[in-house]
Image (cartoon, rainbow, N blue to C red; front, side, top):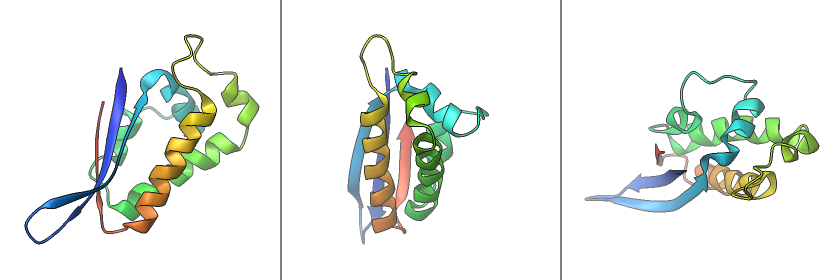
Length: 111
């Protein structure tokens, strides 16, 4: 299973995709730990519907948490090899950059 995220921008008559991401749920516990253990809902549900810039701010919180203790989070790498700390961080960095580049965009997320 995986989550999906898209950043879109509304044009004159249609929505345009500024980026699409997909990643395994196997690393979600890293994200929850990076957010201080909060799990009111799926982390990506918080991102869903936010603006590009609002989403970038939220992703920044996750990234800062993950980068604070890389070895702690690498120890949470899934045993089955599906996903890992380093590639998750790469995806989150790409997403944050897109949100900063398209601050007026809108995030669509599901999982």
